[in-house]
Length: 235
Image 1 (cartoon, one colour):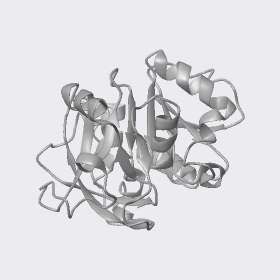
Image 2 (cartoon, helix red, strand yellow):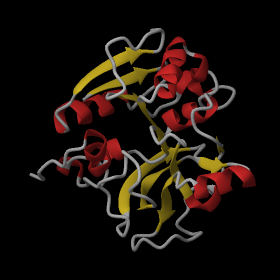
Image 3 (cartoon, rainbow, N blue to C red):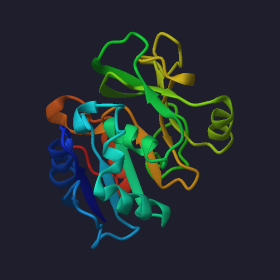
């Protein structure tokens, strides 16, 4: 399995992502500049990553300009043909702007940039991103965003619930989903979702920042192990 990591002007988590995928997970990785127009060499068995950061300085709306980068037409076609696409933080925002995921990411309710560890309760194992997770265990994974409040209308929320598209909800350390555990005001504590086809994933927390023992936290690694369908031994 091969990964492609798209680099936009303002991306700041692309190198972190490449490091984790290549040096921790042992996968083949190629960076893809936003001005490229093709994903030649990638098949639907591979995965394209839209990393975190502040694409185009977050002008207009987060992800609103990046959605029109030349590479995005190829990413949209790739996803529509069944290829896996994973957006993290700013990447999640871009996927929503591009229409690959429903809803939008709005300003945090406290109107502040939040950078801290949070806890996530996995909601389903019926996803290539979450197939190895323990849905009874809270994952500790950091956030770093000012516009992370997931929002959708009532009909979209019902569809997400009906189709089991909600991947993660914010919770406390014991896995209890509460209002106080919600760091940004997201509707229904939603922290990550997938599309109806279950091949496009978006989440606000950063699993690449919780994938190494050197960082004192490996809770995020299970998501990458799920994507590549291989559990690595813990050193």
